[in-house]
Image (cartoon, rainbow, N blue to C red; front, side, top):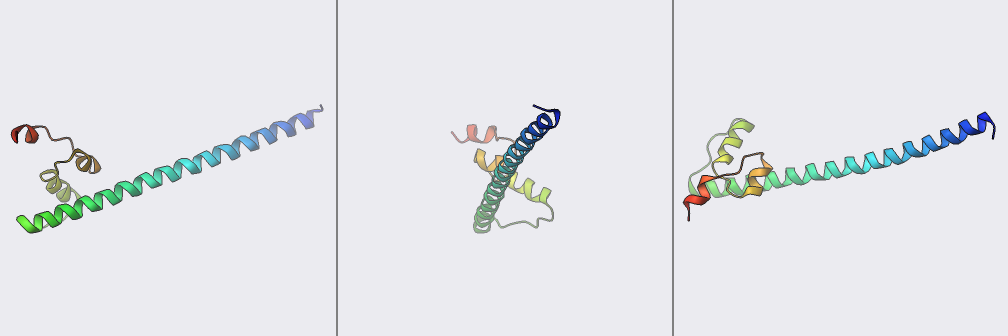
Length: 99
Protein backbone atom coordinates (compact mmCIF):
# COMPACT_ATOMS: atom_id res chain seq x y z
CA UNK A 1 0.00 0.00 0.00
CA UNK A 2 1.43 3.36 -1.00
CA UNK A 3 1.81 6.34 1.33
CA UNK A 4 -1.09 8.17 -0.33
CA UNK A 5 -3.36 5.12 0.05
CA UNK A 6 -2.42 4.82 3.73
CA UNK A 7 -3.12 8.49 4.22
CA UNK A 8 -6.52 8.15 2.47
CA UNK A 9 -7.48 5.15 4.66
CA UNK A 10 -6.48 7.06 7.79
CA UNK A 11 -8.42 10.15 6.68
CA UNK A 12 -11.49 8.01 6.02
CA UNK A 13 -11.21 6.46 9.49
CA UNK A 14 -10.90 9.90 11.07
CA UNK A 15 -13.90 11.19 9.09
CA UNK A 16 -15.94 8.21 10.27
CA UNK A 17 -14.93 8.82 13.88
CA UNK A 18 -15.84 12.52 13.57
CA UNK A 19 -19.27 11.56 12.21
CA UNK A 20 -19.84 9.16 15.13
CA UNK A 21 -18.76 11.81 17.66
CA UNK A 22 -21.05 14.42 16.08
CA UNK A 23 -23.99 12.02 16.24
CA UNK A 24 -23.22 11.26 19.89
CA UNK A 25 -22.96 15.00 20.63
CA UNK A 26 -26.38 15.59 19.04
CA UNK A 27 -27.92 12.77 21.13
CA UNK A 28 -26.43 14.18 24.33
CA UNK A 29 -27.55 17.72 23.49
CA UNK A 30 -31.09 16.47 22.78
CA UNK A 31 -31.15 14.59 26.10
CA UNK A 32 -29.95 17.67 27.99
CA UNK A 33 -32.55 19.82 26.26
CA UNK A 34 -35.32 17.34 27.11
CA UNK A 35 -34.20 17.28 30.76
CA UNK A 36 -34.16 21.08 30.92
CA UNK A 37 -37.68 21.26 29.42
CA UNK A 38 -38.95 18.73 31.96
CA UNK A 39 -37.49 20.70 34.84
CA UNK A 40 -38.95 23.96 33.52
CA UNK A 41 -42.39 22.35 33.17
CA UNK A 42 -42.17 20.90 36.68
CA UNK A 43 -41.22 24.29 38.10
CA UNK A 44 -44.17 25.97 36.36
CA UNK A 45 -46.59 23.36 37.70
CA UNK A 46 -45.24 23.67 41.25
CA UNK A 47 -45.38 27.48 41.14
CA UNK A 48 -48.93 27.39 39.80
CA UNK A 49 -50.12 24.95 42.45
CA UNK A 50 -48.44 26.87 45.23
CA UNK A 51 -49.92 30.17 44.07
CA UNK A 52 -53.42 28.65 43.80
CA UNK A 53 -53.15 27.18 47.30
CA UNK A 54 -51.90 30.50 48.70
CA UNK A 55 -54.76 32.41 47.06
CA UNK A 56 -57.24 30.16 48.86
CA UNK A 57 -55.54 30.69 52.23
CA UNK A 58 -53.36 33.71 52.89
CA UNK A 59 -52.90 35.38 49.52
CA UNK A 60 -49.78 35.95 47.50
CA UNK A 61 -47.35 38.74 48.39
CA UNK A 62 -45.76 40.99 45.79
CA UNK A 63 -42.81 39.10 44.34
CA UNK A 64 -40.44 41.36 42.45
CA UNK A 65 -37.60 38.96 41.63
CA UNK A 66 -36.71 35.32 41.22
CA UNK A 67 -35.01 35.52 44.62
CA UNK A 68 -38.27 36.75 46.21
CA UNK A 69 -40.14 33.86 44.60
CA UNK A 70 -37.55 31.32 45.76
CA UNK A 71 -37.70 32.59 49.36
CA UNK A 72 -41.50 32.49 49.28
CA UNK A 73 -41.50 28.95 47.89
CA UNK A 74 -38.88 27.84 50.44
CA UNK A 75 -41.38 28.48 53.23
CA UNK A 76 -44.17 26.57 51.47
CA UNK A 77 -42.72 23.57 49.64
CA UNK A 78 -42.63 20.35 51.64
CA UNK A 79 -42.10 17.62 49.06
CA UNK A 80 -38.42 16.85 48.44
CA UNK A 81 -38.88 16.62 44.65
CA UNK A 82 -40.54 20.05 44.59
CA UNK A 83 -37.74 21.57 46.66
CA UNK A 84 -35.10 19.97 44.40
CA UNK A 85 -36.75 21.53 41.32
CA UNK A 86 -35.85 24.95 42.75
CA UNK A 87 -32.48 23.99 44.22
CA UNK A 88 -33.79 24.31 47.77
CA UNK A 89 -32.20 22.26 50.56
CA UNK A 90 -34.25 19.45 52.11
CA UNK A 91 -36.37 20.41 55.07
CA UNK A 92 -35.28 18.80 58.29
CA UNK A 93 -37.32 19.94 61.30
CA UNK A 94 -40.79 20.35 59.89
CA UNK A 95 -41.54 16.65 59.33
CA UNK A 96 -40.30 15.65 62.76
CA UNK A 97 -42.58 18.20 64.45
CA UNK A 98 -45.76 16.92 62.80
CA UNK A 99 -45.56 13.40 64.31
